[in-house]
Image 1 (cartoon, rainbow, N blue to C red):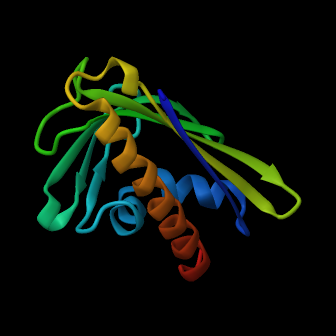
Image 2 (spheres, one colour):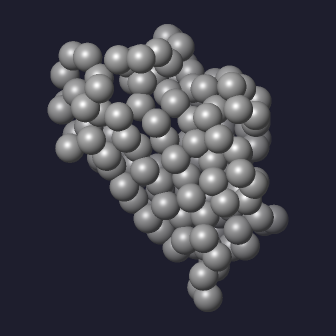
Length: 143
Protein backbone atom coordinates (compact mmCIF):
# COMPACT_ATOMS: atom_id res chain seq x y z
CA UNK A 1 0.00 0.00 0.00
CA UNK A 2 1.50 3.27 -1.11
CA UNK A 3 -1.38 5.72 -0.55
CA UNK A 4 -3.84 6.63 2.21
CA UNK A 5 -6.97 8.48 1.07
CA UNK A 6 -9.67 10.06 3.24
CA UNK A 7 -12.65 12.22 2.25
CA UNK A 8 -15.15 14.32 4.14
CA UNK A 9 -17.84 16.75 3.06
CA UNK A 10 -18.08 19.89 5.14
CA UNK A 11 -20.84 22.49 5.19
CA UNK A 12 -18.46 25.34 4.37
CA UNK A 13 -17.42 27.28 1.29
CA UNK A 14 -14.29 26.09 -0.48
CA UNK A 15 -12.56 29.44 0.22
CA UNK A 16 -13.18 28.97 3.95
CA UNK A 17 -11.81 25.41 3.90
CA UNK A 18 -8.78 26.68 1.98
CA UNK A 19 -8.06 29.21 4.75
CA UNK A 20 -8.36 26.55 7.43
CA UNK A 21 -5.96 24.10 5.76
CA UNK A 22 -3.35 26.70 4.73
CA UNK A 23 -3.25 29.49 7.35
CA UNK A 24 -1.03 28.93 10.38
CA UNK A 25 -3.54 30.27 12.89
CA UNK A 26 -5.98 27.55 11.85
CA UNK A 27 -3.56 24.71 11.03
CA UNK A 28 -2.03 24.98 14.49
CA UNK A 29 -5.42 24.42 16.08
CA UNK A 30 -6.90 21.49 14.14
CA UNK A 31 -3.77 19.74 12.82
CA UNK A 32 -1.04 20.60 15.27
CA UNK A 33 -1.50 20.74 19.01
CA UNK A 34 0.46 23.81 20.01
CA UNK A 35 0.71 25.95 16.90
CA UNK A 36 2.08 26.05 13.38
CA UNK A 37 4.05 28.16 10.92
CA UNK A 38 3.18 28.09 7.23
CA UNK A 39 5.18 29.75 4.44
CA UNK A 40 2.49 29.33 1.76
CA UNK A 41 4.55 29.12 -1.43
CA UNK A 42 6.21 26.24 -3.28
CA UNK A 43 9.38 25.41 -1.36
CA UNK A 44 8.04 27.17 1.75
CA UNK A 45 8.50 25.60 5.17
CA UNK A 46 5.76 24.30 7.44
CA UNK A 47 6.41 23.77 11.13
CA UNK A 48 3.82 21.78 13.10
CA UNK A 49 4.04 21.80 16.88
CA UNK A 50 2.60 18.55 18.19
CA UNK A 51 3.24 19.46 21.83
CA UNK A 52 4.72 16.55 23.77
CA UNK A 53 4.97 14.60 20.48
CA UNK A 54 7.56 17.01 19.07
CA UNK A 55 7.93 19.29 16.08
CA UNK A 56 7.08 18.13 12.56
CA UNK A 57 8.60 19.71 9.47
CA UNK A 58 7.20 19.88 5.95
CA UNK A 59 7.99 21.58 2.65
CA UNK A 60 5.22 23.06 0.47
CA UNK A 61 5.00 21.46 -2.99
CA UNK A 62 1.95 22.99 -4.71
CA UNK A 63 -0.36 25.91 -3.97
CA UNK A 64 -3.30 26.20 -6.37
CA UNK A 65 -5.80 28.31 -4.46
CA UNK A 66 -8.56 27.37 -3.70
CA UNK A 67 -8.45 23.77 -4.91
CA UNK A 68 -5.09 22.08 -4.32
CA UNK A 69 -2.50 22.26 -1.55
CA UNK A 70 0.31 19.76 -1.11
CA UNK A 71 3.42 19.31 0.99
CA UNK A 72 6.10 16.76 1.74
CA UNK A 73 6.65 15.97 5.38
CA UNK A 74 9.19 14.02 7.31
CA UNK A 75 7.99 10.87 9.01
CA UNK A 76 10.34 11.59 11.92
CA UNK A 77 9.86 14.48 14.32
CA UNK A 78 12.54 17.15 14.58
CA UNK A 79 13.93 16.45 11.07
CA UNK A 80 13.44 18.10 7.70
CA UNK A 81 11.80 16.04 4.93
CA UNK A 82 14.23 14.23 2.65
CA UNK A 83 14.06 11.39 0.12
CA UNK A 84 13.54 8.02 1.81
CA UNK A 85 12.05 9.69 4.88
CA UNK A 86 9.18 11.78 3.49
CA UNK A 87 5.69 11.34 2.12
CA UNK A 88 3.55 13.62 -0.03
CA UNK A 89 0.29 14.97 1.44
CA UNK A 90 -2.20 16.45 -1.01
CA UNK A 91 -5.46 18.21 -0.16
CA UNK A 92 -8.00 18.61 -2.96
CA UNK A 93 -11.08 20.79 -2.43
CA UNK A 94 -14.19 20.41 -4.61
CA UNK A 95 -17.40 22.40 -4.31
CA UNK A 96 -20.54 20.29 -3.94
CA UNK A 97 -24.22 20.95 -3.34
CA UNK A 98 -23.63 20.30 0.38
CA UNK A 99 -20.52 22.45 0.76
CA UNK A 100 -16.97 21.27 0.06
CA UNK A 101 -15.58 17.80 -0.50
CA UNK A 102 -12.18 17.62 1.18
CA UNK A 103 -9.94 14.82 -0.04
CA UNK A 104 -6.55 14.13 1.49
CA UNK A 105 -4.15 11.64 -0.02
CA UNK A 106 -0.80 10.75 1.50
CA UNK A 107 1.52 8.81 -0.78
CA UNK A 108 5.11 7.67 -1.04
CA UNK A 109 5.15 4.95 1.61
CA UNK A 110 6.75 2.47 -0.80
CA UNK A 111 9.84 4.70 -1.09
CA UNK A 112 10.43 4.98 2.67
CA UNK A 113 13.38 3.35 4.34
CA UNK A 114 12.78 1.35 7.51
CA UNK A 115 9.39 0.07 8.64
CA UNK A 116 7.15 1.75 6.07
CA UNK A 117 4.24 -0.60 6.88
CA UNK A 118 4.13 0.57 10.50
CA UNK A 119 4.19 4.21 9.42
CA UNK A 120 1.38 3.52 6.92
CA UNK A 121 -0.74 1.91 9.68
CA UNK A 122 -0.07 4.81 12.05
CA UNK A 123 -1.01 7.45 9.48
CA UNK A 124 -4.08 5.53 8.30
CA UNK A 125 -5.49 5.94 11.80
CA UNK A 126 -4.04 9.44 12.13
CA UNK A 127 -5.82 10.77 9.03
CA UNK A 128 -9.12 9.39 10.26
CA UNK A 129 -8.70 11.46 13.43
CA UNK A 130 -7.31 14.57 11.73
CA UNK A 131 -10.11 14.72 9.15
CA UNK A 132 -12.66 14.46 11.97
CA UNK A 133 -10.75 17.25 13.78
CA UNK A 134 -10.89 19.37 10.61
CA UNK A 135 -14.63 18.85 10.28
CA UNK A 136 -15.26 19.73 13.94
CA UNK A 137 -13.06 22.80 13.66
CA UNK A 138 -14.83 24.07 10.54
CA UNK A 139 -18.21 23.56 12.20
CA UNK A 140 -17.24 25.28 15.44
CA UNK A 141 -15.16 28.29 14.39
CA UNK A 142 -17.00 31.20 12.79
CA UNK A 143 -15.74 32.43 9.42
